Length: 132
Length: 132
DNA sequence: GTAAGTGCAAACGGTTTGCAGCCTC
DNA sequence: GAGGCTGCAAACCGTTTGCACTTAC
Image (tube, rainbow over all chains, first blue to last red; front, side, top):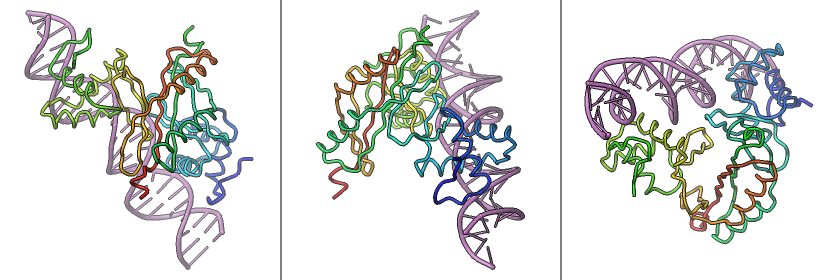
């Protein structure tokens, strides 16, 4: 594992970032990842972490999401397209797949003559634990 | 309409912000709203716009969302909930209703023990005219 | 009169960028 | 050897905050 991205030059820094992403669970901010790298003794500049994450995101290798306060958080992505169910209290995130939604958006777009269709869908609520 | 919020002091600025939100469609950033107010001749400080939107959001009178680049966008909580089909070339927007989606999100949320559920859904594509 | 609300400008915090040197191919 | 990659520090940009002034009650 911990491979670098196909077309990117495999530098020490990129290997480190990719490797870290392969091991951690869930979403993490660029700064968190930068700190984690530091603690592992993998010295990587913060700017490089940002740049690498951006490239990985463009390449579709990581999911990007925004926390409620606007921070970008990253996670190596599970192959398939999916959406998120997010707790607006604790931020817990559950991945949701929705073949029905995919189909529906395509239908709607077709009906209105739209092509190159993409969509975003997020569900917000309060999770069982936070409702306590 | 254009009423101010129950517990807030009805100042000229708050009336202006609430009034604007009552008239515009869809999500807008604080800065957009501030500009719009300016164009209407309603002079309101940017900081005040931010503060007012925050209060309205806390009061549950507006929905807040984050754009892909981390900007906060606001919309008065709409009675008739619908979504948008947006042309990524010309920006044309078509409103779409989706009882099926509403039902589906509620189901998913229930299944995971989430309450106070809300959701956002936008569909992007290229419209017939722009594909031309 | 008093406390809440406002505007301004400065501070903030996450992110991006310019640039000089380094490393991969 | 050339061009991509890195680190640093400065720039950016949306948002928040401190403070003196104004306004609703």
